[in-house]
Length: 252
Ligand code: PGA
Image (cartoon, rainbow, N blue to C red):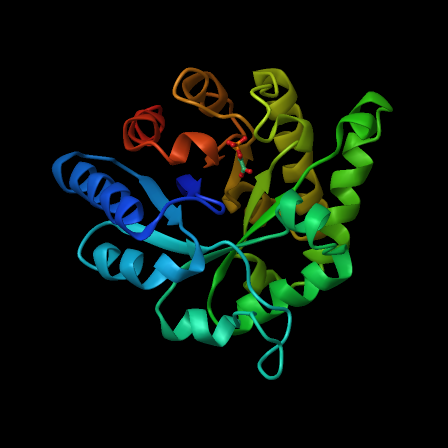
């Protein structure tokens, strides 16, 4: 059975005290409730990774970075390497988020290198893919996602691919309050699974966790997660409020 995941992408939010409070609320919830097979991940800004990882070490909580450099080490001011994250015992790393693609011009080629660094340093990538609104309106969404996966992810060997989590995040749904319908999410997730089967095999396809992201909230999470090929969510805005994030965790 594949892992169900609820991951919180905090983006560039929270002061130190706010981050500490939110982490404590999530840890307290996990310590006092049975979350079954659901894996909970928080991806705070890099400056709070140590704080998060210290708290997570005592409970069933996983920690992810929001980005990683494509370079191994060296003169890249402001960047954070996969080796650093590995040495801090960080479990996951979001790679290819649409905000990184848009504002930091990360191409499929650069993202393939980031994926390589993550795998080399035992970080499980949460690879984001998804189309822009005009691409969906033009009926190109399947092609766009196929190209993103082919150019950034499908060079991995089968063994390495086992560590990958995919997040389908239609860009038009991110932070907009417009969620993909349950049918739109299921259709794309099933398509992604078929691509994995075609590139690797049936087992790889069945075992890969595919998350939905884009205005997922306590109201719509249950319906989205009920889909056969939707294995959880990558949550932005709603992961910043403990009560909302916890409701989403309970949505399985
Ligand atoms: P959102 O963000 O839930 O605020 O739409 C999701 C994401 O960007 O991962």
